[in-house]
Image (tube, each protein chain N blue to C red):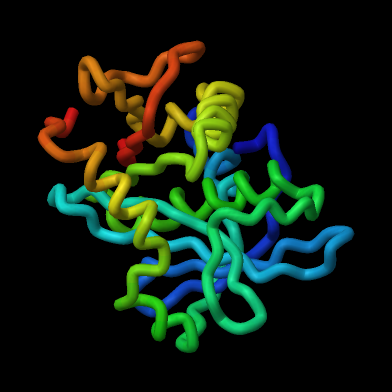
Length: 148
Length: 50
């Protein structure tokens, strides 16, 4: 997502399903964690990310206000590139924890669509039709990508 | 040749430094975001893969 800057590095678990990076901003350094988890549908992995709190608990609802929202999204996108490069047969599904966040993801996909579409097939989930090829300006309840 | 150069540039853009950190393995077998996974499974129920 070259429209956005991203963090330069992240750490990964041995099985490459957990990624960690540090968000840096006015609120200090905040540990972020990304996880790809198998869903009930074979080959579809759910993407989720959030904060690792100081007590080790995980939180995906708090807005950090660390002034790096787009940088975080670009870093999460880089994790999707990495994950799907290692496991090209896997689909990655993602939804926002709120309607606003789902809308934010749609906007990010729209803004970076041409670049993303070079590497991924992208679908949006609708209540009426299930998955359909992603279209800009269309509202979706979730998104699915697969490496081309 | 131009295409190869373009592909390399794209790859470079996407390259991000990664390092295996064994301490993250403690999370690998846990579901860290159960609510989101549950919501995803509900949405995916009965939906056909494209």
